[in-house]
Length: 300
Ligand code: A3P
Image 1: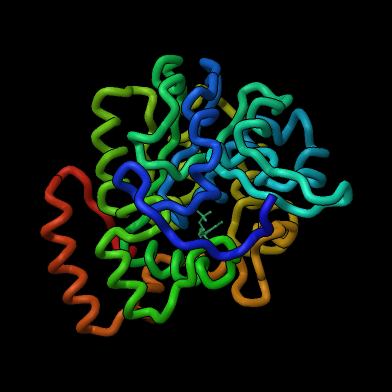
Image 2: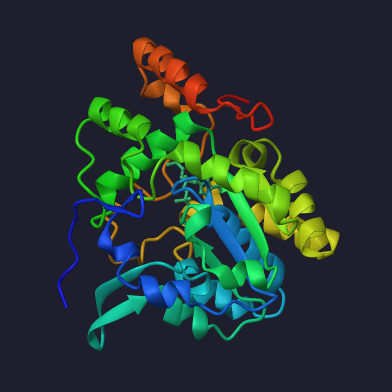
């Protein structure tokens, strides 16, 4: 078993990947989803943890409160395609997303993926599982990914901002091009009615409203009190202080370099893009994002 370290990307069925997300490919593809499984799908840094935490609280916040103080979110909501060795009290073991998912004691099982839509194991479609997809505007998404790649010791070295931005536009990112990811999942919504497509910007604008929409999709009706508690618990500042969701226990992240919950804002891209970079980005964006029905907000 090799040790954890930054890895080079390689082409995997047309998508740039690192081996931590492809090593277990056969088992991932053969994963047996159950009809009540809920898949949380996102491009990295779109608000996965936020929505995972909301779904976990909605489903299990009342029935098993001890879960909230003892199990980190990345174990409650396993990352399906992740296969990494890590050190724990028992020595070096493998963290295998598929196994974690298979061993989840909860029902429904909440499972996370960053795969582009064409990589998702077919049983999720066959079982007509509920899927929550979260998308975030490209400019804030790339900024968040840049900082994340500095602090996450599995990711390829991000290099400087300008070359990173170039690489993002080229789609040479782990999990492939943002453009194809958000579009691919958007199109899937037309044929898979059990897909709730939501936007990070809407969540920042009005978390309560977006939780209401999620509840309608999931067939849940929390009490007003419960909803109030959830809205409070999932606020950025509260999540940042919460060791079970802020990734302070994650073995591969160096929070001294950058906190996992970094800024939590819409429009932080303005602190990173130069005017020229923004103009070039917008030009390129127009060429790639042709579907008028899929619109993002870069400010609210
Ligand atoms: P920033 O780096 O812009 O701060 P993911 O969970 O998909 O990796 O996404 C992480 C991003 O979501 C980070 O963005 C993080 O701060 C943001 N985020 C997580 N919880 C949030 C919350 N409660 N409110 C706003 N943003 C949140």
